[in-house]
Length: 502
Length: 105
Image (cartoon, rainbow over all chains, first blue to last red):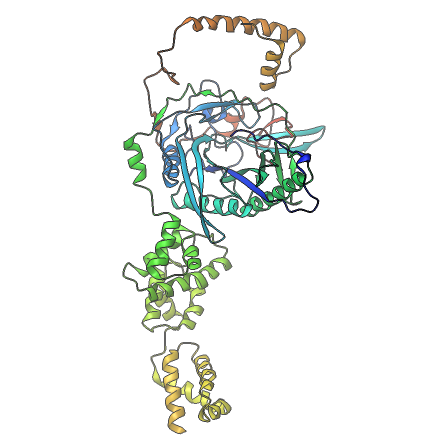
């Protein structure tokens, strides 16, 4: 993208205190680790997370002389799948290029990336931000490889850097967005939607803390009348969605203040410092990067032809936004509930599998409530990842049908849930824990009689016409049955007793 | 083709090489000679030839996503001039490279 010139003209006259109308322009670059088993150009394990330093390397990813790379088909296909999910054009012919620079985490002295002919180009991401549906352009999606990892350490006699090359050659894709975003919130919501898609299609874990989903941002500021225009600033080192929003908010404020004060906003790279809540200039060499890209001579070009694209397209699942709209329309769910249920593919799958294809809106809403309130609550208590529920679809189906058939009360189910063993059906667990509904009328009648005797005031109130007093009596009777009596049964028996003796 | 000292300095700095004045002069002349040899290609008329990234008639040479054994750590580090705790050890790098991400130990 062309660098915008700084045009600050003090003579343009900014009246002190006058409110300038600013516009923020943001474009995001995302690097996502592709979910493959092996690395991009060699057979070393791509999952380096738990490997001790330098135990997942070979001559290719160590950059030893004479070693030859061969591209990983799965990585190419996952990047293609990403492009298709973002509505990109697939140009067909594409190639890999060398991006040359010298740094200790890059043993070959170049990164194999894609320069002028990427795998996918010109798509769009539709996302919801602030209740409004927005669309931002996707410039391109291309494949590349990760670098090694550097660890800095103070030693006697000075500092050293330690290099772990397990990550060297791990498959990445870069998803470059058009500068279509207009606020830090939009940037955050764009990222959340993009990450959701990558997780849905199985292209990446999207885990930001583990570095599987990284974001750099370009942000510039201008006045709507175009009189004041700041240069593009690149912001790096943001390791969470919240950090992206905070860093861009800080930059937006900083750039507006500079322009308002008649100062220039120079083009530069700035790093987000999380604990101080600021961006700081990363003063690097003045000269522009000179990567001397050229076609990778060790790898033949690629042709994502019609057959390959068709094969990959067949793997495209229903995407989050479409699924959300379908859930809202088909099951009468609110937008908020539909969004929560579809945020993770696994949870949406569990929901659909549990209710089955013939579910009525009422059944669907009941299932949604159990997932959103109880199962997600339990998920949080157990520290489970956001896509893992404490119950499987089979278990949830069993629970819902037991509830619908009156075999279990809602109160008993809430008590039951934390005690259900993995793969144990809730009916079996309820039987084990004596939480199935009471069918023994003798026990219920005894509890009713006990309650009536224990709460003469409520009984008198009811008989005096305060029918609401029955609520208290129902609750007390339920308590006496350990929550296992059916509330409607209890109500009927209480009413019968109260009205008969009245 | 005659390279200038500035050209040589630029390439040397990209390659993180420190050159003495004598080395710079020698490399400037040698590199100029090499480029001169290649310049012969400029005589060819390539107007009718499409640009190509590869001269081999190969396309889509891909491998299946199957892990293979890696080298042992000792093998991986065998040629390292310096190592520590299973890492390659290098001079301290203080600022990030273009795509570097750094973390404290």
